[in-house]
Amino acid sequence: MNRRVFAGSLAALSVAALRVEAAQAQDTRRGASSARNVVLVHGLFADGSSWGKVVPVLQRAGLNVTAVQNPLSSFADDVAATRRALALQDGPTVLVAHSYAGMVISEAGMDPKVTSLVYIAARAPDAGENYAALAARFPAPPASAGIVWGPDGYGELSEAAFVRDFAGDLPPDEARAYYAVQGRMSRATPAAQTTVAAWRHKPTYYAVSQNDRTINPDLQRFMAKRMKAQTIELPASHASLLSRPQEVAALILSAAFPTGR
Image 1 (cartoon, rainbow, N blue to C red):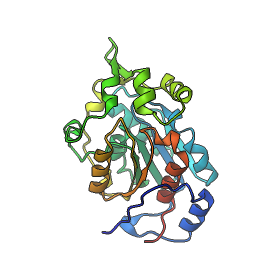
Image 2 (image 1 turned 180 degrees about the horizontal axis):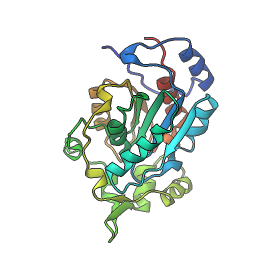
Image 3 (image 1 turned 120 degrees about the vertical axis):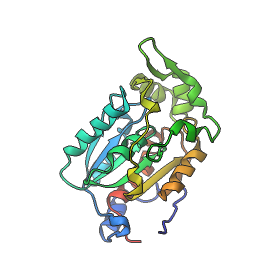
Image 4 (image 1 turned 120 degrees about the horizontal axis):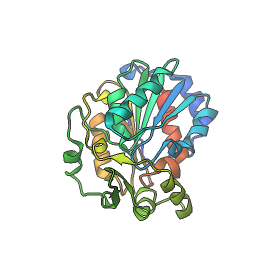
């Protein structure tokens, strides 16, 4: 099944134009249909506020938006939090993930309300696949050396690693503000494995961060290609949802209002 690969920036497309164009056509690819809800799931070293620049764009386009607050205490707890958010939606929903949360939406995305999945510089292992082993096939990104573990068994990125390797294209003061609100993860959380890969069953979109120092960009490209995702590439750090919110929102809108192909 053919899918176009979109490269470069979508910034030149206005949100209004995207919605009008998309609403005028139907996408029959794998049963894709228009959605009125979006559920956003944050990854490690972040919280729901990481979607703060994307949410208003989606709301102005007429979408109902919910940002999940992952506890990061375990993969099962994060999946449960996302499923609770999905249960509150009143109809077709786009499920969106950043970073580690790609695993969460791959697990929770089989919910019948979910019409499509959007991965933003996100993990996308197959069902039962060891993500660490998959990632080890590519050069290790610098951020992995910046995790600091506390005596309670929970970890976070150091300030230096966060500013340099997680959000390197944000102004330093802004990056430090997001560093201050990052969630702390249990050791078991990032090591979990999914039991299902919803991307094998739902229309899928992927935004690769070309300058990513947290997840290797070539690993992102490998996962996006394997998923046969509609893919864009952004000249961004791992935190593209903060540094390139218009482009990220445009990709989500293309999933919510898919055009005919």
